[in-house]
Every structure is written in structure tokens, then in C-alpha cells.
Image 1 (cartoon, rainbow, N blue to C red):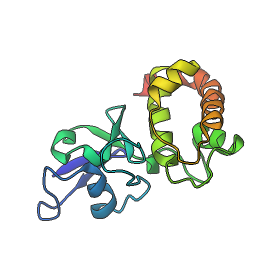
Image 2 (image 1 turned 180 degrees about the vertical axis):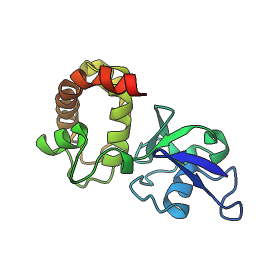
Image 3 (image 1 turned 45 degrees about the vertical axis):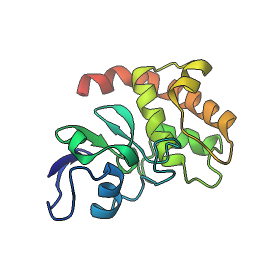
Amino acid sequence: MELSINGQTRTLADAAVDPAMPLLWALRDVLNLTGTKFGCGVAACGACTVQVDGQAVRSCVTPLASVAGKRIVTIEAIGSAAQPHPLQTAWIAHQVPQCGYCQSGMLMATAALLAKNPDPSDADIDAGITNICRCGTYPRIRAAIKSAAATLRPALPKMRAKA
């Protein structure tokens, strides 16, 4: 099976995967992309959120067969220590992470939200980000989203033109 992950075609050996295997396990166990986390296994918490064709998707319940031919983006493609994504910079500036476990999924869901809505209201954020943070840093998350949105807005027309 071939998948497009983070801009690269990745081939998964048929012996290593079943089309019904959740995307999460293919990412973590087969491809060693461990930034995407297992949380609940029932799509409730969002720790496993990745983007599929620009949409935030819970990878723990997404069968591999359903993502064949689609663009998959994981947290590994969002930014780096040397060049962090504006969301990562805002997360640090607003001291969002405590334990940090849910943050990769939270960042992926937020990136998908901001790509569709570059100036989200509190209600938009509440509706668009349904991930659970056990540390309860929701006020900081909201502030970081608004901060990142302000940074990203001028760049969005250029980013959309490249896509």
C-alpha cells in the first residue's frame, strides 16, 4: 500500500499492514512517526489527530484503506526546533503545554482550523477544537490560537497560492 505522508510517498509492505488497520498504528508502528499519540482509541480525545486532505482526522479510528490516495500530514511536518511553525511558537509563548501529551493532536486540529478560518472567534475555536487536554490549559490554548492566527493571517494568501 502506498500513502502520501508529509509530502512523500511511503510504501507499506502488504505483510506489515491490513487495509483495516487504523492509520495511527501504521504511522507509529510501521513508519516510526511517533509524534502522533494514542489516547483513547475511540476518537474522543484527539491525541491522535492528523490531517487528511486538510481536514483534522482522528487516526485511531481511520482505516488505512480510507486514506489511500489522500494527503496525510502529521505533526512531524508542521515545524522543527530550528524553524518552528507559528503555532508552535505561540504554544510556547503562552505556556500551553504542561504534560504535553495531547499537544501534537491539538496543534494538528488547530492548523486545520486556521487554514479554513484565519480569524476564529471563541465560539469557532470551541466548535473546531474538540480535543481534550487533561491539564486543562484551554484558556492558554485559546490565547495561543488567536496569537498564531494573527501571525499567520498575512501569510495565508501566499500559502494558499502554493497549494
